[in-house]
Amino acid sequence: MAEPTQRTRTEDSPPAEDGRQQALAALVLPSPDTLTEEQLRGATCVWDSTTLTPETAIDLGPRRDGPYQWFPRACRVCVTTRSLAALYDHVDKCETCRGSAGALCPDGRPLYRLSIHGGR
Ligand SMILES: [Zn+2]
Ligand SMILES: [Zn+2]
Image (cartoon, rainbow, N blue to C red; front, side):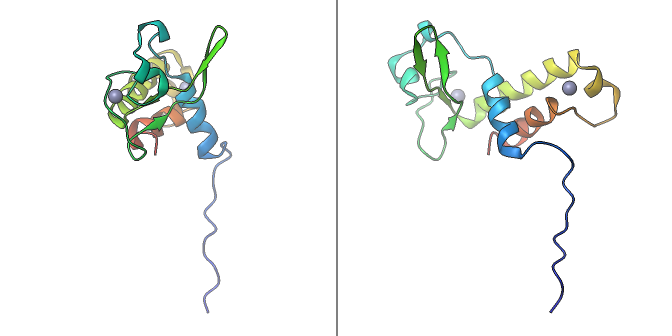
């Protein structure tokens, strides 16, 4: 009976998924040389070696190391910590994020979201 009221206006930002992949791809990883075979395979977290399950693993996107491509994955705790660190780092250098109270730039926003939701 009622007309659809789902007219939530999304601000002109890229879709959440894009921003999320971008933010994940921007996280700095340990050098593949220092990682175990499990970490390189994505069986354990690249940062703290936590064993990952399909439910807990967060895909960090394909990475390239010279001729090799690898597919790191991480646990939610690490993604949260790392993205928060990356966000602080970004805000520190970004005039837009520092200037406007609470409003983050298109680069800062995905990091913020990631740090809250742990990539989900
Ligand atoms: Zn971890
Ligand atoms: Zn910014």
